[in-house]
Image 1: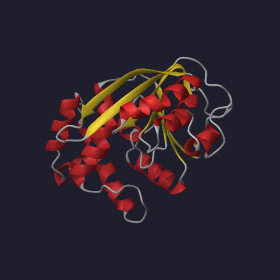
Image 2 (image 1 turned 30 degrees about the vertical axis):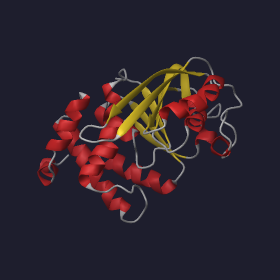
Image 3 (image 1 turned 45 degrees about the horizontal axis):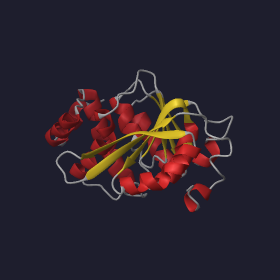
Image 4 (image 1 turned 180 degrees about the horizontal axis):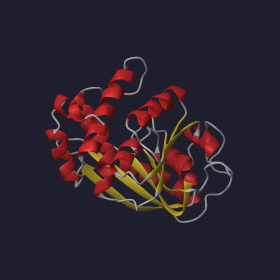
Length: 246
């Protein structure tokens, strides 16, 4: 990748924030993140990918936020990960850049976003990553992508009960679902406790922290897949969000 991109941006604040997470990027990875930013803003000009386009804010609220997982969890070499409702690729694509050996699937229901992600993957010369256009309720069925991933992650805007129904069916027994949350963590945990148990999960730990150089609070909820998810889950399209398990 052309390193000339490094001269176009002030990367020092990004490097310093990453250092607080214990994350260090090589030159190629840094160039990939900068090109990611450029393509995000370019495509955002003709489709809705993000409300955040300021360089510093994208670095902090999208990239740093996605990479915060690395402070608490390092996937083993060759682990498989699915990002459910990935949108513009967060957090799955930044995690792929940081951990090149991860086998990553990006799932989203909007084909225009998948087109963006495919362009991005080609531009960044990434391998071991695939995109899927579709709904979690369909692809978590037996015979598709059910129970084949070591990890599922999601930064999607949905309550924890709904997210667990979308994500846990994708995870192998003894794997992990990690939900990226910003607020009301305790309320959501209490409301989702029964659903998580029914779906075969168990809350392993909750990590609460502030995003570096900000007053933004974040939580990572780690849910261990202790047993197989009953075959009736996820329910048909739309129900997990309209009628969350209680």
